[in-house]
Image (cartoon, rainbow, N blue to C red; front, side, top):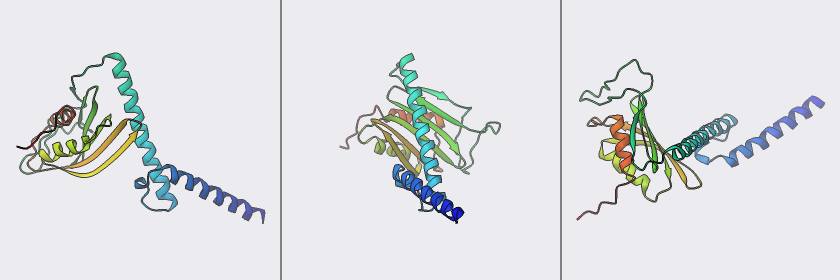
Length: 192
């Protein structure tokens, strides 16, 4: 009989812990209400928070070393990635991960290839209308936004895009990172 009581107590504790985890995690991370989905969603949320924390630490170190208002592109791996008419990506197959970044005091932009899609991560201070500017840049260069996740902490925001590469796209990853970075300094264009 005591074994049954111990098991009930464990289940009750587990359910209480799951309720707390679910209440602390944004709802879009948790797809269903079962234990595996809740735990999986919490893990994804923690990974995202860890990424934001690392980016903030990196930004803090960069500002303390040399605050530069001019963005500078930085290649993570060799990346001359362009889509040709047969929709084949031409790359050096010796690299496992291809990407580029462009960081400034305004924003950190990171672009990576993931299969046939591009992962775009942008960390910046919260700026009204900035996500619309980034989407405009992506659509202007024949990218289609498949997924957007926005995480924020105080006045810092992380935009995490998954985008599909359009057939007409002739942009390298470095160029894409620079164009997204430019969207932070561009003024709103008024149509005459």
